[in-house]
Image 1 (tube, one colour):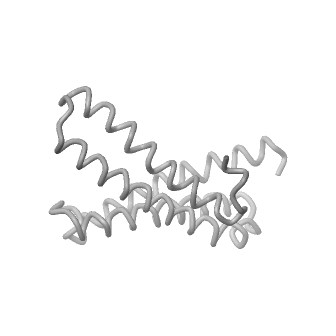
Image 2 (cartoon, one colour):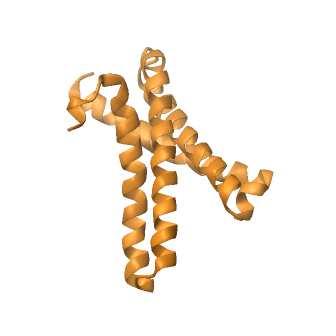
Length: 138
């Protein structure tokens, strides 16, 4: 189904699906542990929407930087991974700061830690992309 999308829209769709999949994965375990409730379903729907938006924005960042960073060889994969993931994390943080009382997003230290985790995950993502590219001979 993703093949039918225009090439520029695919990273956005993949990012949104990845964000939603992570929330659904976590939601299943919460549902099993706490049992079904209207509060859990409402919170899950909000988290699903926020993660899909954040993943989509990360996909936009990927689309914007992949070509320019692609000229940098292996380092370009790492930079693309970090840029995409940190953008998604920042978007999720902004959504959480606006619509939740989570103290992490109302403090500079919390933001630095949150985005630092995004950098670390982005490095792992970039590494996996570079490994895939080298195994495909790109």
